[in-house]
Length: 136
Length: 384
Image 1 (cartoon, rainbow over the protein chains, first blue to last red):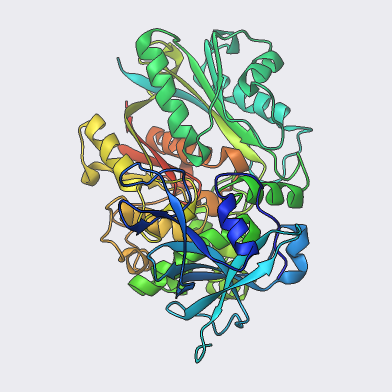
Image 2: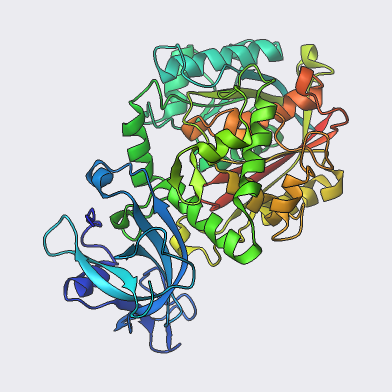
């Protein structure tokens, strides 16, 4: 589906840069050996520096909603589309889209894996999720 | 020092016939001053919320200019749907510190008349509770955020669409007898279920309407305004909480912090949950009613759906909720959302609610919520 671009050049930029290279990268604290979300410059546990580490890119649908009425004019033709929270193996919960799954087939607990889609701004991609093999 | 509400002003919610949002503010202020029996020139603190349809550098100063008054304090508060509680709390501080004696608080917006509806909704989704980086690229809408919470609650607690419907129907029944309510026409189960899906599992009638409207309230000390004797309502306590702004940062999708705000307000007022006779709950969506009632401890976590459907929160139930119809039917005037809850509590405690009067209400709880379950503001009001 179409994706409006996020704002460029902010603390979260490494997330979008990684996505443009087909990688799902998450904030990670080496000292605590833990991922965190949303991105902030420092660890929410120890206040130390945060680096970025690639995720395995698999998880499950924690919740979803099927948008039947888009408010962004660019997305009016895209309905119905699925927004979701996906709980990753690494323990963080991402807001995302579920793609390639019919609205009547999506459910909480659905196993999903990460894919990447272009945004309306060249060079910026977003991670989205599709049903893992054998699911759907 | 006993701080009390001595005047309220409200106009019909829905499409306003007034030319612009500033004119609406002016009318509401005049109504509240008249109800309180004061001259607007007696106001020495004016608090407002910046309307999305008509923003200014300092909105409260622009309103004072419009009213041709010169209050010492002209502050504009940013607290989302918790703003009515926040403004009352600021008024208490001004009065007890001696900064001001008569405080006028007003919140109004005209999303229908002030700007086109689509333009308004689109802007709200971009800069409202939707995270501009982490949620916006995925086409998040405000109803979809509440839809995600509803789906989580259904999955975890077996809440059903019938439970959501019970909230929508009760609010509409209540709004029928409120002359200022935006949506007063009867709504039955069949019409609820036939309404179009907006963001599964939320249908049209799970969502509050977009309304022009708002209200104004005059606050002062007991005895300061003689004309208001017998009709003033005491502010017994206030409490607040702030858990996140964006749902992406919330630790849970089913449990938030309305209870922390209520706990603080109860401590301040020196009473407990059982003393609350009437609850005005911020219900911008049906699921917000259910989740907030649980988080406030009025029902066990996960039990609000069945309890609501069984009538526990009906106007003749154990704890009557939203006799004005809530945001869902009384109306949701954009940035002024929740002023209706505050005004209804005052009208009920005065015993002036007519056909919708909840008989024995001595203590009322007024809840406001900013964002998607993000911040909460609670007031406890009592009969004088």
